Structure formats: structure tokens, C-alpha cells
Length: 131
Ligand code: THU
Image (cartoon, rainbow, N blue to C red):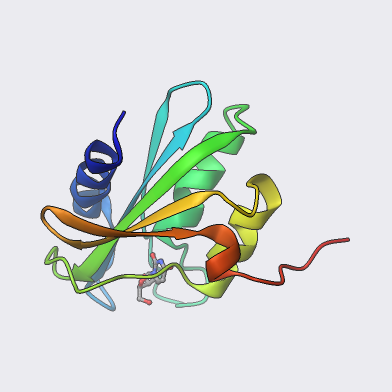
């Protein structure tokens, strides 16, 4: 699985988003060490706060299937299925990533149909909370 292929899957996963309130559709594709890819879309709720981000959807799907080790994550998002410049993971999702991924874990932020930027988790979340 190449970085470009994972980004393409994240773009496709935008189609699974349930975002009737914000119309901001986000897709995530998470590659586990086992070689499986877990897709996620954001799932909104009329009460707003129960909304789950695409990245957490992907992580929760994977972890609840027994996965614990991950190779990389790609994220794509924008209004009404249109890729925006760069849809960065929110702070809560970064903290969830820190639970399972090393500081050098690559996060690919899609910026267009064929373009993306690569960050490490520690660049996005320099001082994660830990117990
Ligand atoms: N959203 C994500 O799916 N991932 C993020 O990291 C940031 C925000 C979603 C949540 C909500 O459905 C919509 O984007 C607008 O905030």
C-alpha cells in the first residue's frame, strides 16, 4: 500500500461520511501493521456533541477488531465531498492517535486529488497527555 493509494482511499471514504449538519465530509484511511486498511467517515448527530470524527471512526473500528499497531493514516475532507486545501485532524483525534501510535507515526493530509502533505504525529501533537 503506497501513501498515494492510502490517500485515494481516504478521499473515497469521504463518501461514507454522515454529515447532514455541517456538510463537512471527512474520510480517513488507517493502515494497520497487519496490512488491513480501516476506513472511517465522520458521523454527526442532531445533538451535535455525540458526533464522531472520521479519524476516530477508523481507529475505533480497527482497535475493536483487535488491531493495536498502525503504519500510517490518511485524512481527506471538505464541504459536500469536495476536497478542501488541508483537513487536519482535530486535537481529540490527535490524542487518540497518541494512544496507539509512536511519535514518528505518519499522518498524510490530503490537499487535492493527487496531492498530500506528510506530518508526523509528534509534529501535530508535540506534548500528548499520558498517564
Ligand atoms: N471532523 C472530522 O471528521 N475530523 C476532524 O479531525 C475534524 C472534524 C468532522 C466532525 C464534524 O462532523 C465536521 O468535521 C465539522 O466539524
